[in-house]
Image 1 (cartoon, one colour):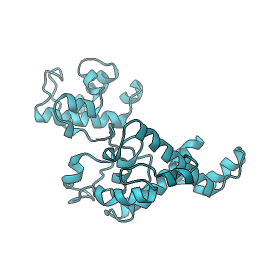
Image 2: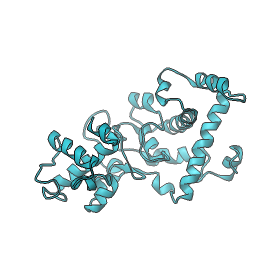
Image 3: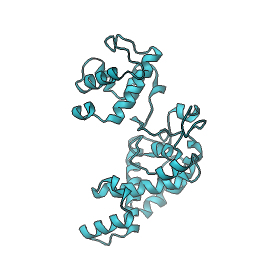
Image 4: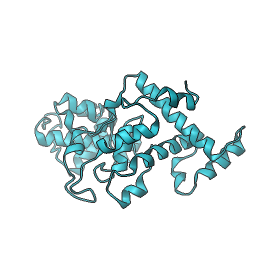
Length: 258
């Protein structure tokens, strides 16, 4: 509720506070920054205080307002920031959800649970097998839905033909399912071109070292790490991208982007 009142994203805020609490427990942040408060994990009072001072940009809230990446860099522990391309993780552990691991890494806007939909398969099995196609196809599908102005949560009730029918009724042109999905693929590649031009490369399609090397200690992903190295080459191949993560001339021509 405090995040909503202050116009803050609860996901980015929560992951940033988690990083700050780890910095506190490490000793990189002390009670000097937190105005005498114990900023250890589980302190609900400290959490509410953090939301208020961040929303009003007071004291330590200015540091929290930097986000997890820049906060952790400032206090000497960039490895504590659970981010991709500078954006904080949502609530899904990529060690338990291998498809989501790939979705986080390849999302054009950084770690995001709304730009790919491997949920059904991820909830059924903890494996990297088959996830590249699921992630790629769902990214294209979601890009098309997002471009329509319709809420992505309607995917729970509607299928691709439902979206195509609505768009066909509202817009000129022959909007088939095939055309809709090609549109989504075009959008995803166009966003990728923008990122490439801005300096992002395949090196940015990665995850924090912690989830790549430290097995999860509990839950469905217990004993697993995010097996990104197994999924990413297959994903690039399905996308028609080079090993460096750049759309090939053939892919751009096929999508009318060359």
